[in-house]
Length: 300
Ligand code: GRG
Image (tube, rainbow, N blue to C red; front, side):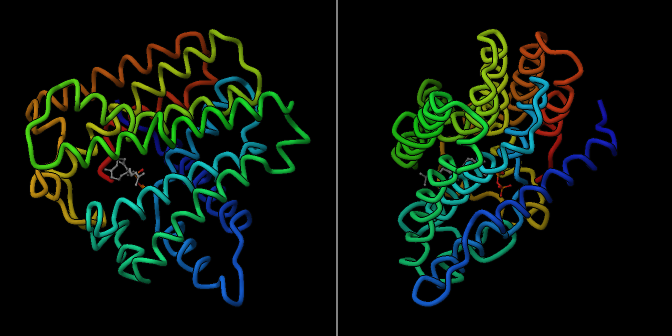
């Protein structure tokens, strides 16, 4: 299935909305803290796809809710994602020089600034999740549930544990179970949380919540498989970073374990299943359905 130009127009509109939100909701400080906020904005504005924030909006839309009030949540998740990229690129982790087509944060600034910019982005995300506008719109118990969802997905029960497992797996063969653990925690957990955030705030039914959660897990795993494939067959200019780095670092990846062809089949299978999970919704979930195809077909 080919994606319509209308889909790409909507994607661009939401990307612009997120960019404006980040400019508004992440402060630019002067004086002694200016270097810190310069580094935060440098990485935030380096041209990410904004997939996770857009999933926040698409999840709300599927429920028939207005996505716009969820802007602080969408920006909070992008702050967490950007922090993870800054820290992942550090010499102590992946030691990468380029990200999103630009020098990585520690290259453009310095290591200490990059660590602090990541710390400040993560902390500011939780400030945004406690944004006054959310407090006036949604009951406090739903906001507490949202904090639990996001902190679990980003931290010990999600991304940070996945990153630890990923680093421990470098340079040696991994089992299927280990690879699944890495993908599930490092990548899929935050993507699933993005899809579910609106459902939690808007008080979705348990059936709708389950459907979005299933969709989120499947799309999250497929996203990482496609990411691993792009690291082999992708175009460096489009990706804005060198390809082949997973192979060089002997990273645990889906293609390394199963080969390229099986990886492509698995990504497609997961995305078809993700779309099936949305059967409880009508056309309101069409944007989520299109995003699944976009994840499969993306070149960036
Ligand atoms: C440092 C706690 C900590 C975690 C790092 C995100 C991450 C975990 C590592 C980055 C390396 C990697 C391949 C992670 C998998 C997730 C992923 C594919 C991130 C890139 O996400 P995109 O493609 O990036 O959405 P943009 O730049 O478009 O936002």
